[in-house]
Image: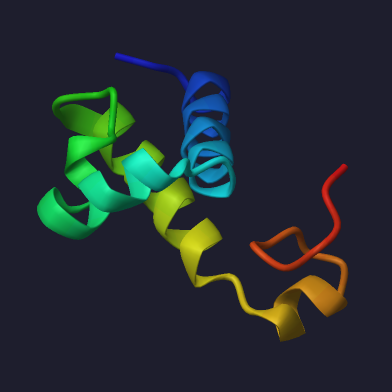
Length: 76
């Protein structure tokens, strides 16, 4: 089982995966959902990756304008 630090990195992996969706991955996402792209099958790691991925996809331009990274914000 992962510790809190490792889970935070897994969340970041999910967030980054949402930012870097290729057209092929977007197609998979549309057909089979987020779980098809999640490299973690079960457990807390699966949940944290999904949370990061989902939040990145749900980030709005308004959120990004306040300085939080998002799909429409500046990349660092």
